[in-house]
Amino acid sequence: MNQDQTIARWRRLLRQLQETHDHELSCTECFDQLGDYVDLELAAQPAAECLPMLRLHLVQCGACRDEYQVLRELVEMTAVGNLPPEDDLLNRAGHRRRTRHGSGGSA
Ligand SMILES: [Zn+2]
View 1 (cartoon, rainbow, N blue to C red):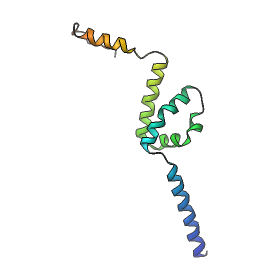
View 2 (cartoon, rainbow, N blue to C red; view 1 turned 45 degrees about the horizontal axis):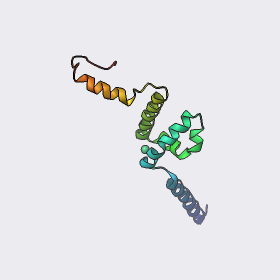
View 3 (tube, rainbow, N blue to C red; view 1 turned 45 degrees about the vertical axis):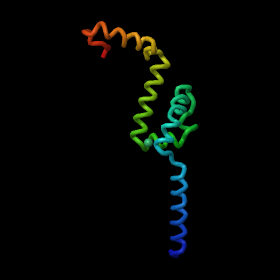
View 4 (cartoon, protein in one colour; view 1 turned 60 degrees about the horizontal axis):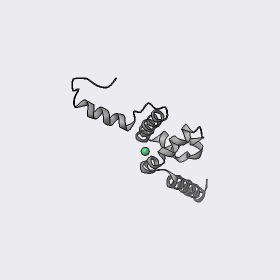
C-alpha cells in the first residue's frame, strides 16, 4: 500500500474523530438539557431522537445517568402528586418543634 494513501486515510479518520468530539456534550451541557429530555420522555415524545447527543452522553457518563434518574424520579413523583406540597413541609417543620418524640417519616 502506498504510504501517502495510508497517511491520507489516517488524516481523514482523525478529522472525523475531531468532528465527532466537537459535537459531544460536556457534563454541564448535558445537565442543562436534562430537564428537556425528561419532559420529552414524560410527554411520550422520542427524547432520544430529539436529543441524540444527550442520549449518547447518558450512555457514556455514569454521573449524568445518575442525575437523569434522580431528576426523572422527582418529576414522576411530582406528576402523580406524591411529593408533599410546600405548605405541608412548612407545617411539619413547625409541628416538629412541639412533638419532638415522634420518629417522623414513613420510611
Ligand atoms: Zn456527564
